[in-house]
Length: 54
Image 1 (cartoon, helix red, strand yellow):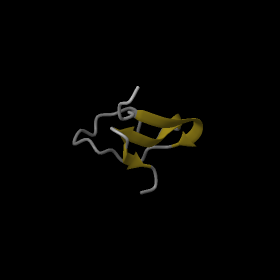
Image 2: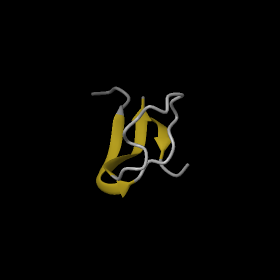
Image 3: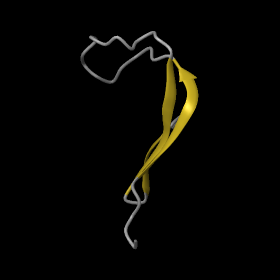
């Protein structure tokens, strides 16, 4: 109570297929495979730090 919020807005039914990665490593089984669930927004100390589509 009376502290800044740390939150994640998560869409559990969003289907998507990762085509790129932000990692330097290309060794991943996830590229090109359909995934379910996606982070839409993260909030740290009451400030938006990530928003999908921005």
